[in-house]
Image 1 (tube, rainbow, N blue to C red):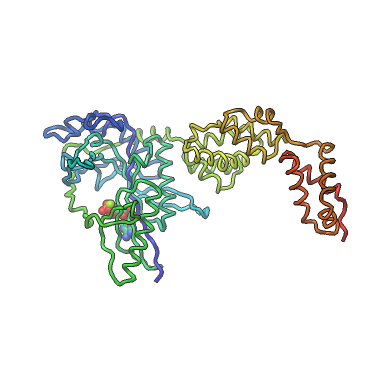
Image 2: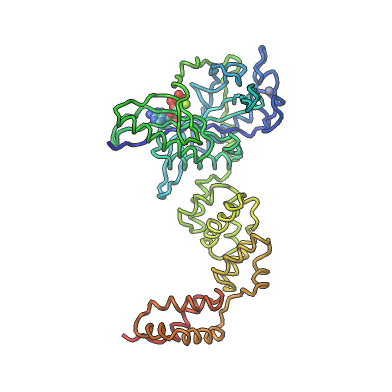
Length: 481
Ligand code: ADP
Ligand code: MG
Ligand code: ZN
């Protein structure tokens, strides 16, 4: 039987506000354990939460950027459960009335297809603390409550995703959006952008969904993809054996490349959700929403459209260029300094990203800045160096931080574009290769490539290829029919 995969994602993104959601404690990562705490986030009796207005601003920003309805009135709820890193024994979240609903995100797939993924809701909540288990001889466990009360947005998608590739494309686009908005650093390694994947399968063509398993706390794109693929295989094997998929919560073990069962799925009623009596319903007025709307930056989807429209780029190029605002800005600076924007895109997507990848660094720390890359491309466009030589000049720019023109002058790489200088070189190549010459003249015109290759080899890649082609055609004369 052929199955279709169905995936819905719940993403938690940590907000970059200075203070926590219901108290004044700092949210800075990496401070000594329990140094960023107070009676409120420690869950002492008799204290009262005070809402950080900035958190609401962040939620509205993301809601507007993802085409959600912003609910003018929403409510705080207590989600009750006991865990050592949750001293109150409840998490303040939103349940029945979240701040944002019914949005969507569009993400581009490998095939070029743009897929729309609907968002069920976006709500605000507080993070829990962190349990740390001693290693080796240390058999104690510790609780660090610095993270308790750090604000999160939870973004819940509809079960619209149909493959690991779609899930990853959606997550990447969502992360770009929170970064463009400046509301989260989107750092998956540090856990500030993490995802639970709900995965089920169903016979292709079936109108109802299968039973899902939820894989918790995936903290890299690679893990998300692998965990989904593993779940699909596991569930297909169960169904093939006539067994049922159980609805449960699972964890991904990257070392063994498997998911394993953590607990049976908790239901909403297990949490005894109820409206938090310490907090008033949240009311946002239209003016606030409109003021925020006016501050929204150009978002990745709009940037992609503009790059196609204004620079004439093909749609396949734009997705990666707009993934980060810094890369998009870099591209625009390069494009602004050269004749052909498409050439700028090719260099940024190919050579530049290749080097950044190899060095494990970001475009902000690129060894070659946008102006320097534009200067290199101009040398090609002006015919001073060939495209091939430019590649090696670029490598030297990365290594030495020297401008392209200096490298070209110092190493004598200027292109040979003088016919009178090239003619004797070509004559010599003919003299050295009489067989090929005769074959060419006898009609084997494919040998043109051979002569071009020889000319490039003899000149160390410096001959102007277009000129070499013209001269060869002229000097080889007509071919016998
Ligand atoms: P809970 O909060 O208990 O996990 P929700 O109803 O909020 O439950 O759903 C959570 C996520 O599960 C959503 O992203 C939703 O799209 C997804 N989902 C629901 N049913 C399925 C299914 N059968 N297969 C895959 N994903 C599903
Ligand atoms: Mg869930
Ligand atoms: Zn506090």
